[in-house]
Length: 305
Image (cartoon, rainbow, N blue to C red; front, side):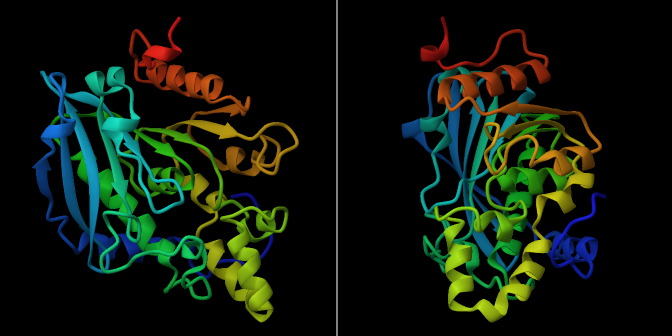
């Protein structure tokens, strides 16, 4: 593994093995209910409740194409914020026709905010002074629970399960071998403390706020974040990967991410941001469809032409 600067975890693998063991000891206890309003003649939408570590009940949106499967699956990991995009509303019909789609609301986010309603800003530093108490330990476990549930659905093609999102997609692919493909845009969990010092934008500014208020806790914060640094997860990511890097010269450009890329044992393609939702989105859609062995990319109608 690439040598990392800053605080080192005492036992990175043991920390996550213990977390996964705690998760495995809890049955997912799924409750699945159709959402008729968001079902169509080509796909059925469901709301799914699952149990994660705590124990804590999560909520997720599931869409399954009508017809005979199994189908490739897209697992959308949440961005940082209280509102989670509803997959049937936020995903193109062409994708729902051909893919099982699944989006999870992790603890603290809307629809999974009982008994814990996360503060925004505030979630990123909740319990950050101690790895055992850091809220992201539970959040990462939530994402793994969702991946396990999705992979066990009989409608899902086990050879084509993609985790799509930011840092949580990466950690999920590292901790759940059932994930076969990964589309990831690193944002928060890569050299977090040093990255935060290069910006005043939220949510990374939460780190700066915390350390301005508690400068004596910097070593503890660095120690906790060492268990969540994507570079330490990298050797465990065997999924075929598309890494969406920032534009040249940005904090998370391809050069900055090179230690992450070099540490990954699987196939990795890097796409530099073009600052265009259409161009970057089309590239990732074409990459995923090609990686899934599909004849045509599942593009939204307004992207075709």
